[in-house]
Amino acid sequence: ITQSLGYGVPMIIARDENHSPELEAVKDGFNAQFFNSNDEDSLAQGLISFFENKEKWLKLRKEIVEDCRIRYSIEAMTATFINLLK
Image 1 (cartoon, rainbow, N blue to C red):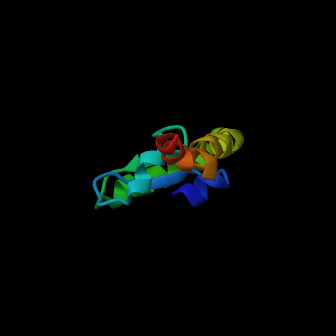
Image 2 (cartoon, rainbow, N blue to C red):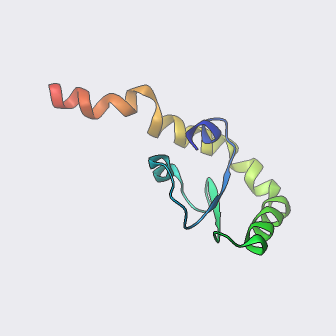
């Protein structure tokens, strides 16, 4: 997820699956959209929605990249541990 978001690529994600901890990076409607697990129609609607709203998603790319950079840079990821050592 963070790899995609780092390049400004939003995700479409199955709602009720066992996801990795990276799922916490997802902000529904900002950098991702969920579809109902095991539901072909929901996935299809999600893909169609992405296509129909492609201008919205393209405009969000820079914001998605910046949000990911701030939250998941090496500095951000290590700050908690560095602060513990101080």
